[in-house]
Amino acid sequence: MVLSHEEMKKIFENHGFSGFELRHYDDNMEKLLSFAAQDNAKGYVIDVVPGGLQHGENEGIALMEKHYAKPERFRKLCEKWTEIILHFMCYHPLESVFVSGMTLPDDEDFLEKTPEQEGYLLEFPLESIDDLEEFVDRVFQKTYGEMTFWFASLDLAFHYFRDDVYLIVTLKKITEENRAALGLLKKIVEAKGLFLV
Image 1 (cartoon, rainbow, N blue to C red):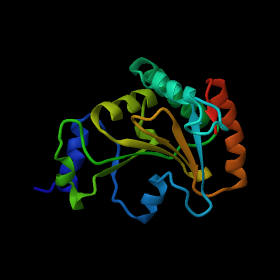
Image 2 (cartoon, rainbow, N blue to C red; image 1 turned 90 degrees about the vertical axis):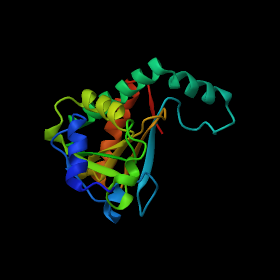
Image 3 (tube, one colour; image 1 turned 90 degrees about the horizontal axis):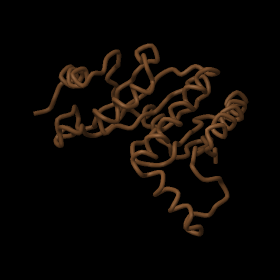
């Protein structure tokens, strides 16, 4: 049985979500959600270690990641990420948060039930989110989804994953405005004791 879009929408409403639009995947959405370099796009990472350290050549990196992967430390790291996005939103308008994924915690066969077997893609306009921290917690508790915070005026996206100890930031198109915004982001990130690399 394949669910209709209305049935899928009802499932997410039953998980406590509201004010969202169920979106279809297309090439534009695929590019927006991707953190791979495309065209003149550039990627950054909000990380727990500074840049310039070669992966695998410093055992301290692995130890640091293990340290932050512990549940309580990871929870605090997620709080820092959310605060960084909130601070950034004070200066630049957040247009939408996209939640995408393939399954739900309580339904292992969810992918096979989705229209065209493409998983789910939900768009939450900012006005539908009352509390960002609560929203992030709900996404991680009720779905196995990933979040993309889309700052359309900057062609910039934050990619928020469930299991990694870093937050990826991508510029989909490099402009003077988003170059200046990165300077602000670097200051906000460093104030949280993290690194923009």
